[in-house]
Image (cartoon, rainbow, N blue to C red):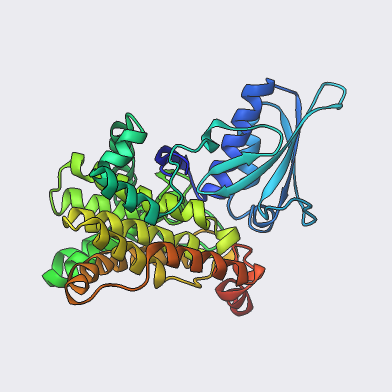
Length: 400
């Protein structure tokens, strides 16, 4: 598996696969080859079908140092469904360099012509079963395992925690209309205000949902957020961390540890299935985020590794088959509300895991449900995988 640093990253919204990944690729292209006067980017797959709504063309033009033409195409001969060709041209308009870039989810990129160190395997175990066997054979904790493999990871996660809380705080302070043709009003500040005058039971839930709306509205506005595992699903973990810090007064050091534990489960999903909505639907984004957050919250509840696994498995299992059908190609509807519901389900999963594990041994392993998610994703029609050509996106267009 890759490092957890490659799972949690700061980047501008609205979409890690559509804005952060192309931005990273264009910056690296310039670092490797230098500046050229002319560029051409040809987008394929979800990048082409929903690139306008995600501002993919804008981020590419803003990042490259020369004049750039961006084309939205459909005929893509590569094996991975989401990517683009990037070309540089000299003063005579002669091609000098060309890359084939794959946006594989969460802002992570692969380049056909250029190996990347971010693809290096830091963790040699391939499954949670293997990791648990190692923990028991060496008598170490999951944090020993993670921090032993990635020196300095905790300091990095403290930075990511600060980024998450800043994202939520900024969203709670902001009002107005989000960019795009939906003309959608920001709701986070109003939701938080509503939470002040309701029952204690509802207050907790509404505040959590206001925090997810705050993060979601920030990425939808193109502002900086933290992938967890993607920008489109970042509201789940950001809201949970903000809630634990500000409402439950959990220490930052412990929250960084919780991010590490959640990151392990996100990494396993990324390794053995996908965190790309263009590949696996929204089960790969919000489903993965709920699984990660459930594991993090279970850790904060002082549950053991088997119970943490149970929580993560519940979080993933009950999002199987969830489609990715963004209305008008924007990461707003139904994405932000899915984050809001998702953070509640993450906490529910951890609580259920705690008490259900006292009743009976759970029969479905985390590895099993990840493999199921991977196979389910392959069977979801392309129209329901971030193309905005089916599902709610299609019905909305019929009505409007």
